[in-house]
Image (cartoon, rainbow, N blue to C red; front, side):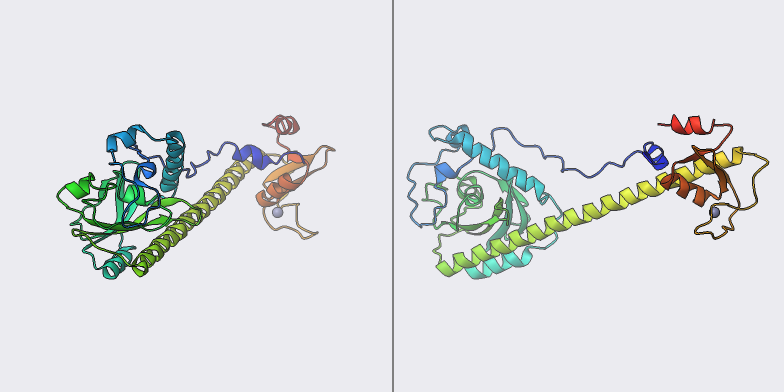
Length: 332
Ligand SMILES: [Zn+2]
């Protein structure tokens, strides 16, 4: 059989919209500065080896540094991954509260954050000690630089460190002086954000502290990977359910059509019972529909058996009103 009657029946059933990629959030043009060149990517030494004064405007314009296009491409890929993880602006549910508390204990700082670095902002999935601040700007020097670092990123005195001395959080009300962060890098290598500790006075760090910070960032990354896998599983299940619903709807629509056809058929030769029993067994359902094959053999069946025959055999609905074979052959 070349085509199932179900195919034409289901063609009319609109497919439900399937979840696609999330709508990209608005980005601010010109704000996607890629600061690693200006700030010394991966710098972990307490005395930074980058001596030029960081110039925010210069960094944004890509002035005086090579590979701007390449950096921009890398940052676009990073931001695409941030979108894909669908973590930005989700309700803060306390998932990472223990992470920031542990970071505060280990570093003895009044502030710690789990931040996701967006194009123009750092959004906090968890924050302690920031009085309800939910996001800050992503100027180079702090999280925006730390997210690109290959290891822990430490600023022991932000007021003298050329990477940070012009940063709004350093010059402004917060008065940030100490900053240590580890990048949140997913299993696929995507850099989503940082686990950071902050103090208002200069501090030193130990290798043990930065090692713990790195492990905390790995825990966050692991959680985000699991969360994304779970999101995908839930959506796949929903799609399957929707497809099953569509098939059920199509089947129900076909049954309705068959009954309508059967109701029109008033042939006198209709037997009382279905003639399409299985394996020689007499079906006890009433005969509702007449089917025939190309050789002229015909039989009356209940709706279920007639439908089954239409699916698996080269038969058509023998119906005077609809023109029988020609209607079936000319169907779409
Ligand atoms: Zn039957």
